Image (tube, rainbow, N blue to C red; front, side, top):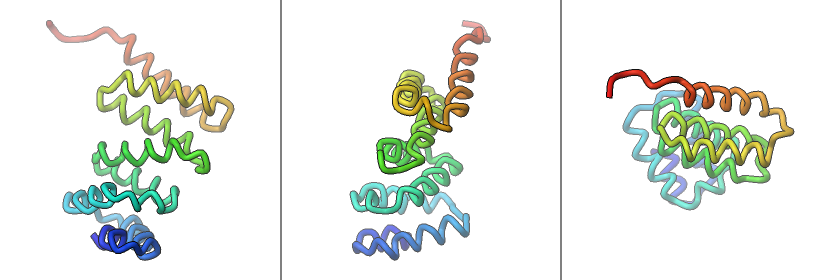
Length: 144
């Protein structure tokens, strides 16, 4: 909550410190979702360091706040100046797949191959592609 208040006040240093402390402590409850959403509603969060935003996205994903995690991962995946953008793009693919958005997941994976096929993240992309293929090729069980 403090980070959201600091961000609204325009104090990026205190916002960053509050977020780092929250991530370090690791005690996140459902009440933290409201300030996180407020934080993401403000365009100022984009001025925070990408590494901090990645940690925030991973925390949101752990708490199963998929919408918030996906918004952060997508934004980070488009940052050409962020060295972990390929990883963020793969996280987009994985989250979309888990949410049942197969077309969106495949699109993210294709973007990865187009942009980053030669990078160190390739094994993770191959693993995701393999999982996606296996899931698609599995016969559907259950009765109609």
